[in-house]
Length: 161
Image 1 (tube, one colour):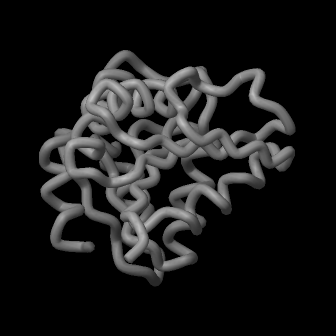
Image 2 (tube, rainbow, N blue to C red):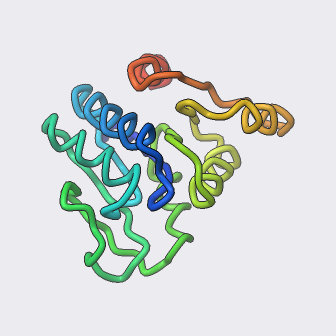
Image 3 (cartoon, helix red, strand yellow):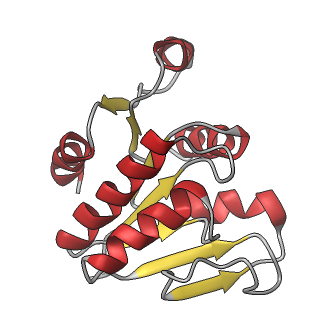
């Protein structure tokens, strides 16, 4: 049976300290469950923080990079995948994940949320704003679950798998 892959998406340069803290803890908890962490692979923001947390807990981290090289790869990524696709690599992030998690919000994260909804992937949001939740409720797809802590989010993943 294939390994379970949890995709953690979130802002890079625009990540808040809360996003960084949550992503680090989330990465750690994912690794402790022996799930594979998949991120956008870069050395910034949520993707770097989640990768760091997972590595500290002995996890396996896959990074789907937008570039053609590893120059901006997080040092915590075990398997960097260079796509040369820029933001289009978000489709790979979503389709390769068994569960998609959004931690924080940025333009790229928004596209990943919409791709996950369109692909009918299980989608969980960590500390999402009410305005986003209201918007997503209008779409003709099941609304994603929202968690208020990394531990709660992990508890939502387990029954999905």
